[in-house]
Length: 267
Image 1 (cartoon, one colour):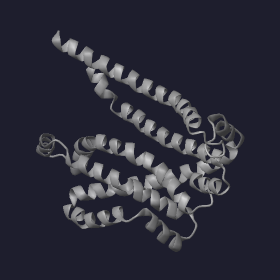
Image 2: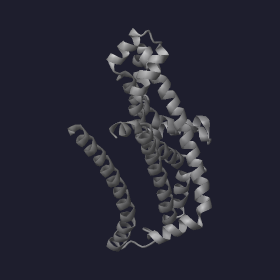
Image 3: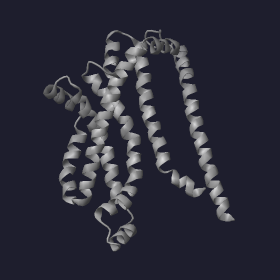
């Protein structure tokens, strides 16, 4: 009886937490335009410096085709760089697991690359590769690569020693041990890395376009600033923020789907 009560309380708490999360996002979306209008009223800035929400909304609608075109460029660059970062990070994490000397060899390189300012790297890349999508994709890779590498490496090494011992006792192959023990153990770490890295891919693409591009949301921000189009700058900011928030929420949805068995076990 006590166990049933505890399980019921756990399920109720999960539902309450879900409702609280949705309510928090709803409050945020409602609060943004209100705080925006209050900021205009308090500061007294003219509309060409701090445009009101209706002016920005008009830009989002009237220039929707322009915004959609540049948004698509940013999405392609972000997703391409993110896919490459995932492939490299997972491959290295697996190699670190089975070839420990590779981790010792790669660690200094990862530390150096991670701590070199991306502005410097971007300048070198544009000189070498020119004004092509490749430098921007590489910047996205560098920004998103390290959280994935660190989390997957830690997750693969966090496998339960008892399960590993029993798999070896059953004479399981390395592939069976990896797929049935190590990768399931690493999956929560891998998903957690996406919460940072996936949103970072959007931000990285926009920053790279800011530095050098002829298309994309970052380029559109620079162009709008040179034309003193604050309304368009705010519109692009809203679009970029929506992409980043959407990426985060997508990761949360995937996380709930992959680990739905935890809730099902409670019920």
